[in-house]
Length: 301
Ligand SMILES: [Zn+2]
Image 1 (cartoon, rainbow, N blue to C red):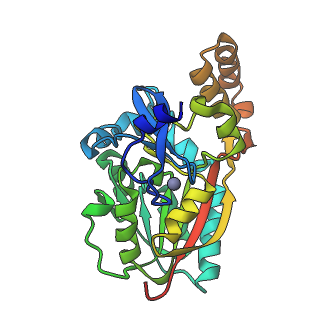
Image 2: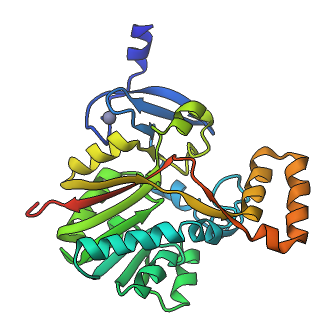
């Protein structure tokens, strides 16, 4: 058995702990997922190319989810994070003694930028989808269409960089984090949220975990691996938490109907659609499988 595993071992090192310790874990949606025996990081292997990834983020990803992944309603998903987002913005302001310049990577239609702007932050965004960026630009937001590697911001341009539900989508986070460190001033903050593959929910479901979705999610971190990844790239982690979201009853039933395809959810959906007030009630949902990390760029790095 030991020999069999060794035969399948690949030569690529883990992006988080940098050890040569990736082994096959499972196969899903036709993609092979490897796990690091040191830090439990999960990564697709081979990594899909950027052109394959870019084609995922068309209009359907942000509005329809017709391909079986993505958000049924992107706006509803981000709205569910509003209270967490507002708390984080207040944190940045307090840690840095006032608002400053903020870059939101994966800004989509600029939902977070608007919240930060309302609290005094000067915001810029980068977004891979021209459809989503266009929605934000039409509201006067400063969003550039492109990827982290394609940006040309001068060194130290920002006090805070945010990446909401982004790092798991990147082909080469190790390359991008170097670029991000360059854009941040020394002592600047990097805020990340991403699925936590080490959470109880993820470990219980194994390969059936709903956030293990290749090729959309390429790298699934856990608390240990994300902390190691940040420390290995010139950051110190100053806060770790998990993000709970508040969804409307209608949205939750919509998702259940989509995942399970059972008649009962469809009947319930019809009921709440006819009774608008019930559907609009927001319920907190926290599966504790979505983590938040705030890190500071180490001075002089
Ligand atoms: Zn590792």
